[in-house]
Amino acid sequence: MRVYFIFFITLVPLLVNGAVVKELHFKTHGKFEDAKLCDSLGVKTRAWYQFWKDKTPKINAKLIPSFEDSLEHFYKSEGFYHVNIQKDETNSSVTFKVDEGKNVIISSIKITGDDELKKFITYKVGDRFRALEFTQNKKDIKNKLLNKGYCNYQLKSKARVDIEKDIVNIIYDLHKNPPCEFGKITISTPKNINKKIILSRLLFKEGDRYSLEKINRTYHMISGLEAFDGVELNFDQQNDKINTGISLIERSKKTRIEMGLGYETDIGPRGVLHYERRNFAGNAKKISLDFKYSNKEKFIKNSLYWPAFIKVPFKGYHYLDLKNEFGYSKIEFDNFDEKKLSNSLHLIKDYDWYSVDFGIGYERINIKKPMDTCSVSSQDFNPNSPLENLNKNYNLLFPFAKLHIDLRDSKINPKNGFYFSQFLETGVDILSNSSTYLKALTEARAIKTIGLFTYAIKGRVGVIKEYANHLPESKLFFAGGAFSNRGYSYNTIGASNSKCKNSGGKTLVDTSIEINHPVYKKFDAALFFDSTLISKNPLEFSLDFRHSIGTGIRYNSAIGPVKLDVGMDIERHSQYAISFQIGQSFWS
Image 1 (cartoon, rainbow, N blue to C red):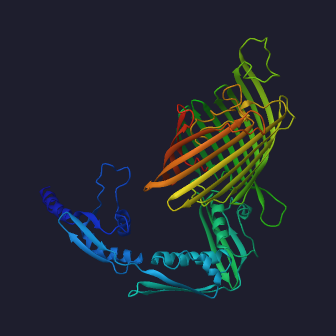
Image 2 (cartoon, rainbow, N blue to C red):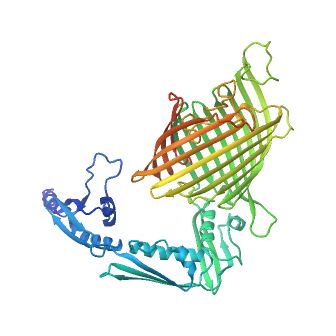
Image 3 (spheres, one colour):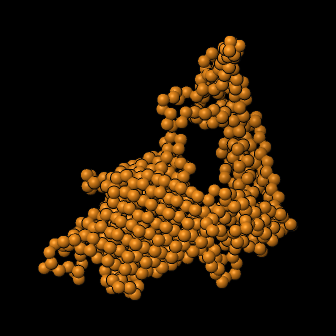
């Protein structure tokens, strides 16, 4: 025992001396922030939540000798070829004093062979030359050529640096041969998955012009089935033909369980639970169960998804997916309660950037509300009856169709792009207590990032026209909440020209404008302006909007932004709402 103790007290000083930690400081002319310099050296700084830690970075003293060379390499890659770095080291710290010197600028850009190259180049004469940007731009040019089908191109690029004159001359020489085509396509799938499932996700066929973008999108389409642990695409070029091999490994972990929490002012806390079984009974089918619970809303939903259910009789690999959703819900609105049993059958064509969804739905709805002149329509109200709760059942059978066009750069946290959707629903008079009607909802979103600012705008316009028998109020338009006007809680905005408070409307205009700016690492700050109009009658547009302004904070996580918003009605300052959302909201 004594031997081990002597060995331990002898080893401790060696371990301590071998891991001397010193503070890291920089003295520069401000070309780059300290955090950027730390990243270039691979030095970790404290996380945003580690407020108890000193923000001054600490490093192992053994690494100091290599840092000077690493800093010099970083500055030269950023165009500062005359950088002078001095080191001032003490027992507790090391300070790098950086004199950047004059930077190298781009003096000329010469292009020979193909002038199309001009639109691919991201920099211009007079810009500071950055070696990393030059290398990345060359990769981008190659990808753009491959996207256009030119797999046999010849590209030469040079950057001739004259350090004495502090200039660089860039030379490109491009020669494009005839474009390539997709050749033979071979698919290897697990035993319980039919090849037609993969064919339904292919965005190219034999003889199509080669495109790297189509390959990448196809990869994401196949991965989106969530039935595989591995998706491998192999290519064999034979002159101007690109043969493609697709190999798949079945997913081993088929069950996924997700939970989420949220909060809104009037609703309070809410929780959701999602259970999913992927590749259920083979052929990439998927079943799921969803539960939601809050003070005002409770629901359970079961879903079955069956990809490539039926083939469309067109040339190519065109299939329609099947989706069936069955659910039961209880919702407390401000002036009525609703119980709903529903089932909808969908046929879906998803082509990555657009999708078409059409089918037929059934809803049996029970509405319970106080019996008065506001809560019932003229054909239901009897002024001689005692005031009591009204219970009425509705049976709705409705064909529907949806179109989505999604040209955003990301579906999780987009920074640029455009989104459009169109929804149509019409009731048919077949069942007892049924209604005939037409419901249309159009939505468009645009998002653009310029510098550090991200600008977003969203607009929804909806109209409902009743023909025979009125609709249950829950089928009318309401607004408010994290996905709508954020000065109000969920569905608390009704028709402003109705005699009854928070009555549903048949005309909706709902718009939002938002500006985001990064404030610290993965955190963004937001300012928003939301405006909503709901009218009692169809195609009734006025200027009686409810305007709200607010601010929010976003944390950009791997599953999408985590958002906290506080909004307030401009005219009614006592009206405000707080909403918390995990995942997409404004751009979902």
